[in-house]
Image 1 (cartoon, rainbow, N blue to C red):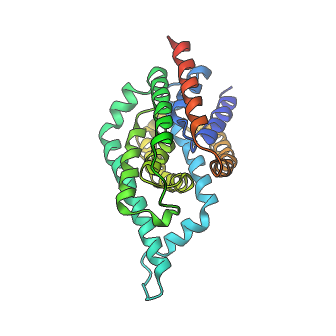
Image 2 (image 1 turned 45 degrees about the horizontal axis):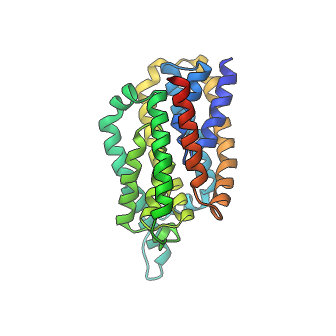
Image 3 (image 1 turned 135 degrees about the vertical axis):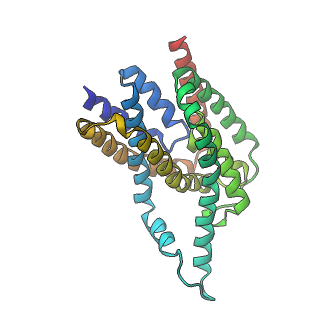
Length: 270
């Protein structure tokens, strides 16, 4: 039974992690409905995020590897590409810092008080309304490539990511909407969100796992492995489809889904 639950939750994580619908919210609710709760379940939900983030690393492996290799290499007069990569890495680091800082300060409070269906449902609804508003008021985009993102805009996106510390807000939703407000086009905002997820989710996962290793045993390996694998492969499919989707559509459908889903949850739990 736990293997079946791990399989289902892995798919849910992979599908929802990079969509603006809150993977954490879906996992909390799905785990509650499946009866998969408790300390071990919380660690499992954190661990399978690694599968989803590795899907991004794999899909963008050429960009990630070229950026990493450029660190510390000697600059030349013809190193415009190198300079762009340096700025890209700096921007990701700057955007990562706000959530890292506030996450460390509020981690215990959020885990203890906010990880429940009611707060998640409320955040889903409010986030959906905000998405509809942003789609209406967002300025015309002026940034059409992640290499063109300025340090100031990167920091602004990082501040938007802080909002996603509240369960149900959605890390992807907060960073993409933040990017659009800062004049990134949808595709660029989405890709920047993907790249920003790499350090953010690795750091958050490592932190949670180190604090929770005492609650795990070797008997949990198979369950965690199944969740990890299903999360990885389902995320691969969703990321590709999502990029194609946003090329010709806005985010209103995701906003409406959030509002309806959140309202249904409130009705179910109240």
